[in-house]
Length: 259
Image (tube, rainbow, N blue to C red; front, side, top):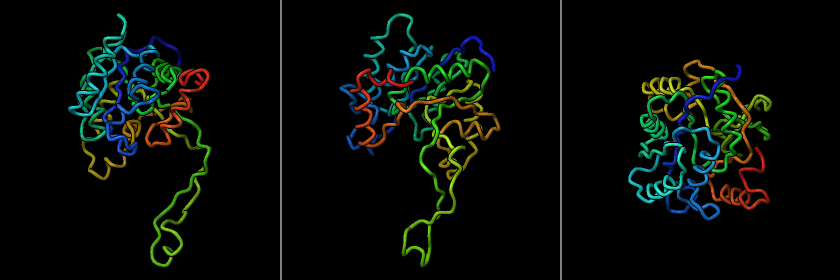
């Protein structure tokens, strides 16, 4: 792949999660982080990266509080900033992504799908993904090497259950494993085709699909990997929120400490 002109890019921000594991009794996107809702950190990072012609935020259906928040942020955007579009999410993450795709403006060539919960993703990660798309990749994901030893397991039965509910069946080759982050980038045609192919999946097959890149893999389309960032942690549990607060309180600020 060689360098070329950047593509007209829309960013779909998936922010429709309930946030039950955080325990705040509110959508995850609205949970405070460093004095601002998680969603605001994600949006500021996307806008600061300069990669987006449009940012499409997928919100919990009927959540007027987050809509007002996004409306205030839209008012802050300077002339020439990205178009900010708000849509209601669906019953599943895939439904929410499809709702976001349907709201993309004409002329969009590439789309990044980003979890609002990865609110501190550095600008450099957005750049690496979009640069790979501009150079000819149809699908790109940011990844990190896996540092833990990973075991495969199976449920035990009979006498084995006296010891533990699971038994180890093997050890994965760590050098071949990567932890996947967002934003995941695709040419728009590729992502549309991938989601259309998923319409024929049954409930069990759909549940096994954990990200958009898996749908593209099922098409047989190569998915390329670029370097992610340790700062792009996904805020899911109270401990994750503590880690994110620690990054924000660092001497240089979270988004610029490590790219």
